[in-house]
Image (cartoon, rainbow, N blue to C red):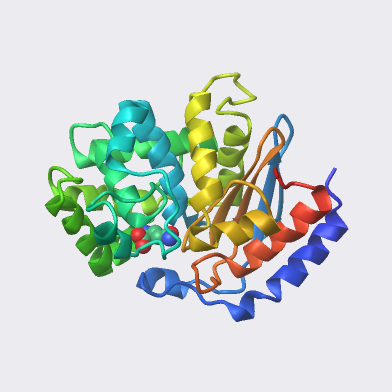
Length: 307
Ligand code: GLN
C-alpha cells in the first residue's frame, strides 16, 4: 500500500526543485508547457495503478519512444541485424551529439538511445510505407499502454519537423556513411512522429509495468514482447537511458529508466512495478529535475535499486 500522505509530501518537495530547470525550447511547442507540473503513476504488477499530482496531463513520449522502437526493430530484424547497424556502448555525450559519429567507428551510432542510434533503429522497422512503419510503432504503444485512443500530437510533430536541423544533419551524415539506407526524409518523418506520440503517466506506468514483468501482460497472460528483448532494453535503459547522466541516476535511483525532453520518465522496477513520471522542467542534461528528485525519494523509501 502506498502511503498517500508521504507521497504528497515528496511531490511537494520535488515540485519545489522545478525552478532550477527549464522546459526544452529547441522544439518550440515544448517550451509552451508550464514548467511546474509534476505527476506520477505507479503500476505494481498484478494490482491497480495509483496516480498522484498531474498524472492525467498529456505529454509526448519524445526519447521514451526509443525503447519501443528498439524493441520493435529487434522483433522485426533480430539481434544480429540490429547490432550490425548500432552499437551497445554509452557515449558520455549529449543525446544529439555528433562528436563520436566521426571519431570512433565512422558512421556507426554508439547505441539506440541517442538520436543517431534511434533514427537508424527507426529505419529498420518493417513496413511498406513511412505511415505503415509509424502505425506499427503506435500499435505497440497502444497495446502496452492498454489504450487504443493514443495518437500523435500534431502540433508537437510539426514543431519538431520544422526545426530539426540537427537531427537532419545527423541523419544525412548516417546516410553518407551507408548506415541509413533509403529515403532519409521518410525515416525522419517516422522518427518525429513516434517522438510525438501523446501519453500520460498512467500509460507510461503500464508500459513500464509490462517491461518489469519481462514482457508479459499480467491481465491477459500474453507475452507481448520476447523476454530477451526486454532484457536488452533494460540494459540500454540502465547504461544510456538518462543520457549522459545515466551513471549518476544508477547510483541515486538504481532502476532501468528512460527519459524524454518533454519531461517524461519511464521507470522499470523488475519483478515489482512500472513507474511513469512527468515534470517538464529539465536539467542541463535534458532530464526532468522534479521527476529525478521524486524517483530518488521513492527509491530510498521503497528500496527500489536493483544494485
Ligand atoms: N524528439 C527529440 C529529438 O530528437 C527527442 C530527444 C529527447 O527526448 N531527448 O531531439
